[in-house]
Image 1: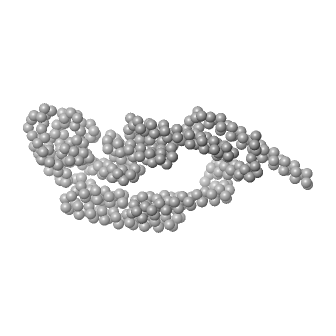
Image 2: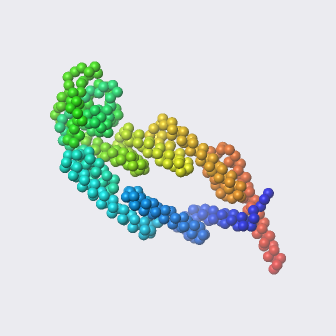
Image 3: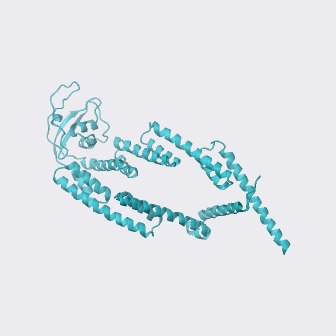
Length: 405
């Protein structure tokens, strides 16, 4: 057996001492870390934190230069979470928040102008943007609600035909399938996805959501196309409109964030939708897509285990997703191969502690993967021998000192 050189022995000693010190720090508790952890460990940790904070501040600046203030704010907040005393991060946060507030106010005013002009859809988009820039903008939220509470001018009765859904009716009458919550709310349907052939549904014509064409009034009753044209009838109170609006606002905001690839923020909005309507197809589909896209990003970065977890989350929203199952398997295989090979490389360089760490990461995922158990035991045995050798060397040094005395 080849024993390590004196320099390598010192490195091994230092690594072992650091590991022991860190373990003792965990046991002692955070309040006693400085008493237990050597100063050199604290210095290393501090330097890593400094680099992390600096990197986040740099990213914040880059997004700020690109006028992406929402992402810039997120980066500055992360930096402040790690180092609350960072003056640079705090100044950046304050600067960006001021810019976001100005932008929110500008979009809010545009929304008011669009509303006065009767351009309700454009007004709603402006208010949504203002709300995204300033989530606590109460006036913008109220305006979005007000746009969803117009007067009911009238309604037509539509008998559901085989294969029809509320989304299809919304596309037919309003020219936009995403307006199906209007129909669901007007008919007090708790689940917009559950309609059946022969069921009569009232389609309201609302201020700001006029029918897309007068052809809608000529919709025929009956599966064979026979029957009298459905006429516009007097309106009724829209009792469930406010609840529909809250869900619809979250859905629309989630879709906007999804299109901008802000998947985590989009998921937060879709979760609000699903908490009220667990079977909402739009929220389910885009939640699945959001987790999958985040998984693909991590997969490309070779963060395979984190990617696997995102693909697993995708399956919660789409259980029959075959590509999710495929990428879960690929991610685990690549993760195991990566850390197994890294362990081999460390082992060859006699960096035994690091080799063991790599192999234990593999074993945690798959205890039967290749010869991982054998290599862990072998490396631990070698470490034990090195420890025994150190003890012998220490004893030898004591004996020599005794002889000199």
